[in-house]
Image (cartoon, rainbow, N blue to C red; front, side):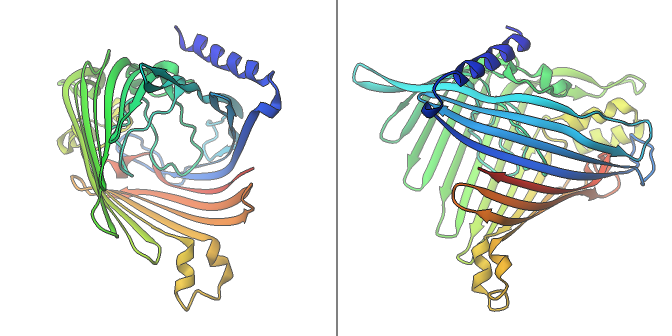
Length: 418
């Protein structure tokens, strides 16, 4: 079934549900407005001047709908409601997208005195553990920690789950082509249909998970994860995935030829990390992960030497570099009341700072991101937040992150719920 037909069916189901009694529904509305400015730079692949920049204004309204055994998340996204570029030949028109992120039915049945949970429809399935990267999110590619508006979609899912005293057994079929938003070439070609089994278990203070999955692209995947509480302050998490085949951008042996998307064999992804928190309100995450599918340091060195536009495809892979380290820090707003110097500054009680540093040890590339969030209003039923976000892509001049076309981006976000 084509993506268009699936989209029509999902939209039709949404309109059909709207004809039912409104009193049977539950609604949770979220909205976001985002003003963004992006500064671009000259890189090995794009010889432009440093003063080129874009400004844009975007909006999002989404609603979570519940009706008996049905659930849906529908988003109306406004792209480039305002757009300005320092390049006269660059112009974008405002456009709107109606995106059904999720639409699924879930219930339970009893068979031979055994209760089974059923799920059917378009669902976000998140099995990954980790902050900066989640190897076990294997069905649809989720953007990690975006600074602006991002709508995540689920995959087509049919699953049955059984719960025992230690955890859950799940049998699942998925079809990742149910997404409405257009992805890059790698994401489009990686759309898969497959079936798998998952085991989740909680034993004491430790969560275990293993997954075995087969689809028509990877043709075999196994994954494991563990999350454990070490003491009152420390937590450890880790995960690993092996897949038999994968798609990757391969550099040609003849430099005049373009980079091509090819199927390769044997890929590994692994992540280990620690979370530390104290009573004051500091929270720190330290992570390292490896992805064999990404280009190595020598691959990137060759890309910078050849420097033809097709070599920019390396930026579109799930991870741009093989080795990554992440530092994350955030401070709970209640922390301001513990220090004498800040106790009398009343507005700080609604202020949450967050800071991330993504570092590539192979080539000394850096992506630094900060969020400054202020809660303007919270009644319990509705809330409004203002957020200043900024992302800087820098590092050594021959690093992959320092050769991304965007030098930095600054956003002012206003978001809320009602």
